[in-house]
Image (cartoon, rainbow, N blue to C red; front, top):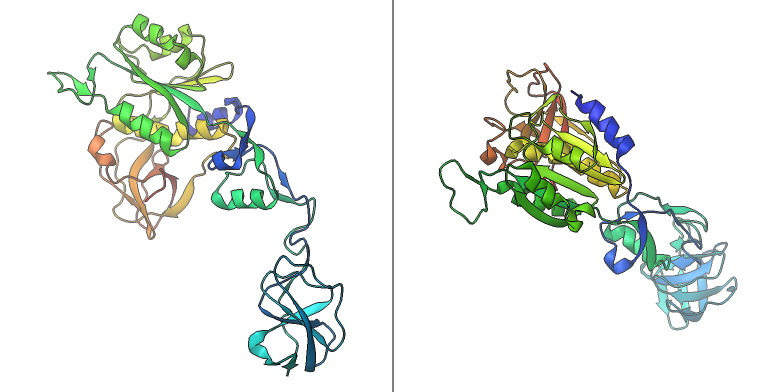
Length: 391
């Protein structure tokens, strides 16, 4: 049985990153940059005005200045101005070297001249290269392409860039007692909530669902499904249910028969003890325990980490926040991921009965990581897994 830390270390070393590809800016949001973005030129590329006003020489004394012209944004600029000359400029105007900009509110404008009673203080000039120099790394490999990062790429003229692909994930639910959500379950049957839960969580973290399939208890039936080209071509195969050691639990045998090398069969944590993880070349497979709370926890803590590694992103970090609300009282001494609600004041543990208590997840946006034998109380700093966007 592996500890949580042992499995996290194995995922860091054994999960392969996907190949990178070239995409355009319009389809890159949310992907991960596969190369450093290096500045091709100074930014700003020229001295430019930060304000509307008049440009005068840096060494000019207060007095009256003749206005010798104006420079609108985008227009060419004189190479220099004389000692008693001023040039009308606007925010973004290119400037000659060695000038300051006096805001129009700080002078008196009269016809072809301006009177400037005082100079000094801010120059209101954005100097060439003050933001970055040619050759500087503006965005590092591994950065998520947010709207702001995409704007930086556009400023550099990078309309195509190398990114890591989104992981394609195939999902198989198992169990003869499981029926479609639109069906009315007979005695002993349950609706297939894991298919809905997994698909939504995959989309939430940017993965591409390659398809969902269901099979009954028989190993041969599951093998037939998993030999479909859509599943064999997926980057990650998730199997819901059948991960325990009962007579009808075949996920480990299924994956071994398909050629996966299994490096995790059981995990020393709650919920999520029967977690199976394997690798076959560049393809990963994970057998998730079928109970919905276990499903949610193992996905948030481990599947999201696998997807991040595949997509070239940094592994999700555990946050440290203050525990609010009641003391966490438990009987089990295993490491536990406790359903919780994260807010501005801290994280509040929520009540849950067991790993089958689907309704307990309604308000969950975080999981409190409780080490074995620990019993945190209000005011303690605890580690937290943030789920989704934590709204």
